[in-house]
Length: 436
Image 1 (spheres, one colour):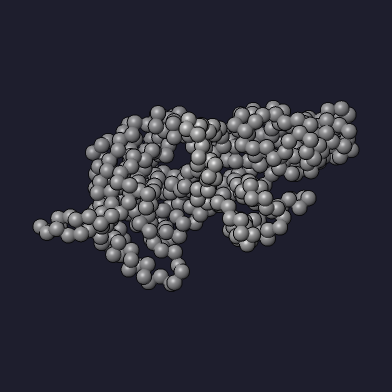
Image 2 (image 1 turned 90 degrees about the horizontal axis):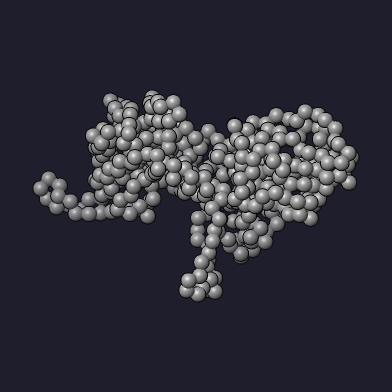
């Protein structure tokens, strides 16, 4: 037998450390080659790290939430000497890229194993949020979130037929399987049922939740944006009566069961028209170079709540799409983000972001800018209110639009002028489709 020291591989794109999200193994467990042993998260993506060889786990290094430098010891395996020698003489396969990232990996150079302790080099590997197709040993292909929920429900993933690419198990497959067993578990953002004993916890009881993984990245980026960007907030009331009439008319012409248009595609299309006159709002601030980069194309970020936290998938070149194309693309990238199928390029590169809390939108909000962008537009709840129209009181559908701007680079006058131009387009929706 031989001891095999596996070090955290190079995860690509200049990553120097990764945060441990969760171990899949513990000391004493037996693992097979290519079996995922730990999930880590970099600033770019979540990564499933597989074992390079088969063996028994002797020890692991680090707990969930710990930051581990690339090249540092990750776990020690007790392996068969012959198997270990074969494994390290062959190129180590990089784990397949999951949905929101691409791997940039090179195979290891061939070498022979020492007789006593084998040390795994930090070969470049990368993976993102959705699991790769099943690998050797019959490993089930699915995402880490689904694995966790299946484990919580006591479900053996090998019993579930996958409907995704290459037999990958997607959320609806687990939902269907669990429903048939009459043991539903939450697969989206639905709140978990709280046991009666937990609801009756004694006064003063506390619960500690470690901030790790995507939640830590969100917290860090939100803090940096709020700390470094002087936000200028501007709120305007919109009369959406005409827009709602058009929306209902277009939805009524759709085939039964077709997705309905929401307000967001109209907002995105109107915004792409307006930004031609306000290029300072469709920009990035490159702090390292001290340069404002203005974009001719509108790469529209769509703030999306997912089971793992807030993500911002991107519709690239939104200005070149029709209303229906924009609606379909917004829906597609949002669903991809929710199911961890989004590609890396679909989660980066936005030049301005829109956000909506839907029916929870409230009266007003102050959205935080998605750095390095310089503006974000948010919509609130639409409600009917009495308004004075042409000297008479009328019931109109109104909604507040909340926006934030980086006051270092967008003056208050320009921000207000842009929102007024956007308001005009949305209140007279025919102008959204008229080329200037």
